[in-house]
Image 1 (spheres, rainbow, N blue to C red):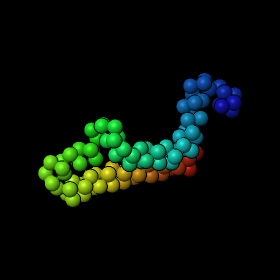
Image 2: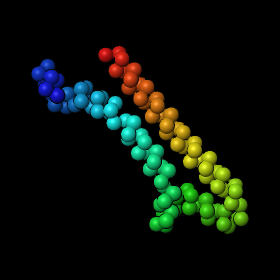
Image 3: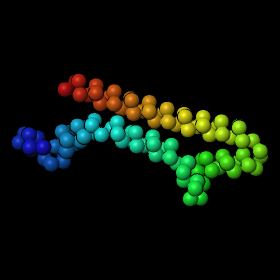
Image 4: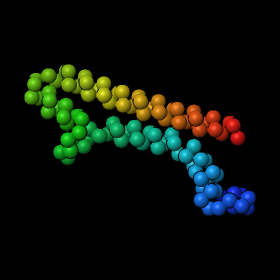
Length: 103
């Protein structure tokens, strides 16, 4: 921050061009892991009567007596969303590392 300010940057410019890119680059892996864990833990929300995907799957399965199909689809949805989030984070990390190499 001191170097950016000594170059004549304002506080907002220093945060935008110097501080935040470094902070995001360092925090991104931990933040992504927390988002993925949060996604996996959403099944706990059904305990407090929040209608979410695993609760709706259980309701569907109990009404139609199709437990294997419902649970298979539920696991497919969770796996796909988790994989897509992981690929998105890998892309962001790769892109941020590419920006770092260009400097």
